[in-house]
Length: 280
Ligand code: GUN
Image 1 (tube, helix red, strand yellow):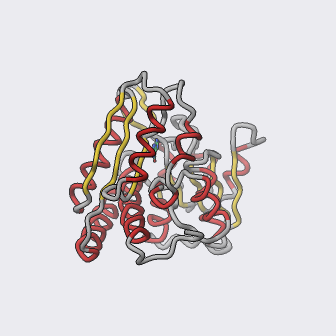
Image 2 (cartoon, rainbow, N blue to C red):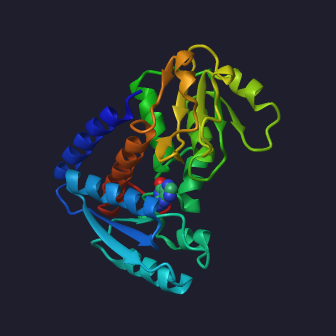
């Protein structure tokens, strides 16, 4: 399943929506510290914004930045009308309480979908901002017409960013969802039952050919660096049994960025009064 090609289509669609909206959209990106991977991800998001006509307003803070300073910046961005969406790149340095920073975001600008309000909206079946990685995966599954209703879906990984929202989205499409994690007994037996597998653990080759049912759709969220190469969580030979598979790179990653753009347009619509924000 070619996430790169699909993401290019989505970016073109978002560019049309931005033009139709006819008002400025500004995504504030906040990068704290010098993590190379984070810096690269933020740069890719800024480039994607530029391509579709969204202004990326970048803030780079030193690794020693205090929590109070970061909360101060978030408050400024919340109040700034030019800023319609806010993205604080994770992870944050250890002196900063990540969940406190996320909770400080104005929920109507939470384009990452990490605020408890956004998570709650999804949980209760009225999604506002859905975290970009699982949202992008759903779009891949839809584009490739992977049947979900009544299917068995196994999500490996239970993070707030991927595993938990992924399970909720698959459930909303009437899949029978199992979430596996580090304490799951006989992971292989559980995964082998799956028609749809989403691997989001962050360990190279942890899903092997023997664990995958013939014809299953396998989505690989992993980004692992092994001997200078980027590989996913799914072993190479899984392609011999899977009916569909997302490559790494070129699968989930580009669609994550495309979904962030969709969320950023959604934020602008809420703030323009074109869409009703629940409770807002
Ligand atoms: N770190 C890893 N993934 C993400 C993401 O989707 N958004 C942000 N802000 N930080 C991340």
